[in-house]
Length: 241
Image 1 (cartoon, rainbow, N blue to C red):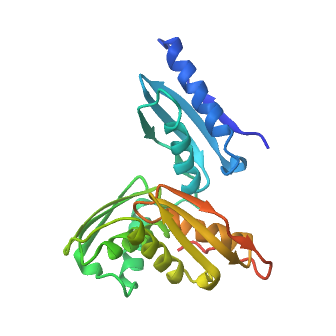
Image 2 (image 1 turned 90 degrees about the vertical axis):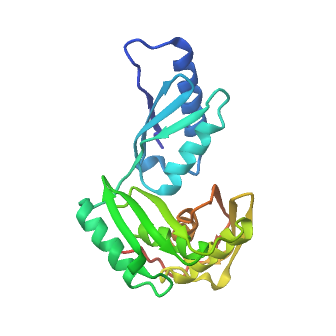
Image 3 (image 1 turned 90 degrees about the horizontal axis):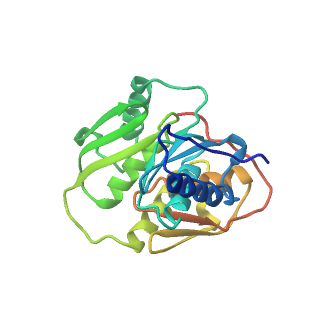
């Protein structure tokens, strides 16, 4: 499989910057979890900041490219401008309406307290929710809408509460339960230092991927290790909401 990642050379480039960008490319192209068949990543550097541009097929790939780059020695920060490929494309107005509809239909969330805005596919959620779990679920609902490029979750929690691995696990389990295209009955979620591990089994590779995506959509998740086994018996794809 051809792995597409390129260095963008500025006209006044400094050699050390190119070396750093090359090390980042080697790190990300060595990650077999990334779907390189539908990814085209461009890498440039600005001092110790790595700038990522191009396209990927899933949020998981976008986050993994960023994580891989951050682990390269000498990289201090990441500017992640990777876009997620969506077919067919949607306007900001269409995305916003679908997000609003999704929140209105969600029994977990009081949509009347939430303001939704969208710019260039980036959804911003503002307002108030009763709990940290509901804040996370509102963000997941926005991610479930096809066309969403990123979610800025600025929702305020009315009743502050502790946050940590247990709360992330709870949110992932609830998201899996809410997803009609995932049978969560045989899925076990474990979280350690923000890294979620999925154990158990599902019926198809598509369901396995959707379960992983659901966890990536949860605020605070740093990485997802997908150890779900597949026992054939179905093969659903998530429809565009």
